[in-house]
Image 1 (cartoon, rainbow, N blue to C red):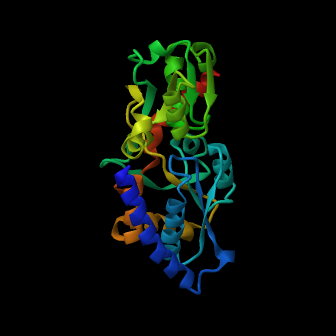
Image 2 (image 1 turned 90 degrees about the vertical axis):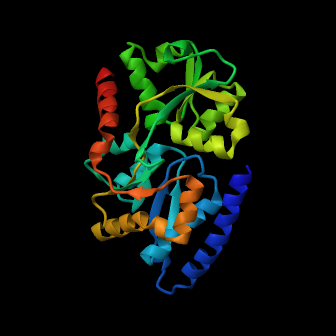
Image 3 (image 1 turned 180 degrees about the horizontal axis):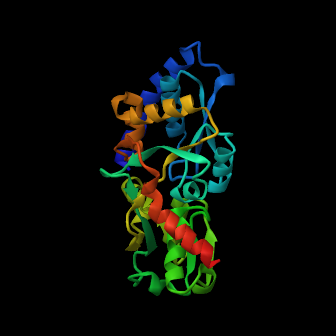
Length: 288
């Protein structure tokens, strides 16, 4: 918690000067605002972080920036595909579903690679070693369009000849990975499917909550949720947003954002990074 407080303190100091500089720039007009979408990730309620992102991108793009948040992945993805958002941080699952309409701008680098995992979690005191031990559970998923919070577990069940509706006594969506952890820790759910990156970072910044749970299974590494944009949008703006993301480690505000998110930076990535996610989607889609 001390580290989180220190990070927040750094964030507030950095963003204060960044916003002041941004608002002073006469060329930033509200009518020209760039829209950047966020799905319900673990820090989406952190107002300081949201303001940092807006200030950093505005300073790099020379235009006002507005962060747009919605409750579900589907809402953000729909806006992005319709080019009603200039860019958004989405999940690999909706990206592969709409890859003809979307372009990957950049992918976060986490612990040296653009990869993350899905975790199956239970309460710490429970005896369970894998998915088979969770039969008959009340299970918490994150979002129906989340790879780590739904698709990975659904695909694993499919390989067992089962489905969430038949394998679990009941399942529900929490619409947030942090909420999955809370549901399992509190006993509202017996088990849950969660983004491993979120669980790892939450273990650092909200240890009392996360230590009430434990991981019983980790998936194979997969492509980290990307920053994407609609192909129908402005190609020049897509290029500028990509360059702004890649430059974050060289900028004080960018470094503060990366520190809060526990990321190394952003990198360009080929869509093939999401091939394993696409394979799971196609398999489960065809299974009905």
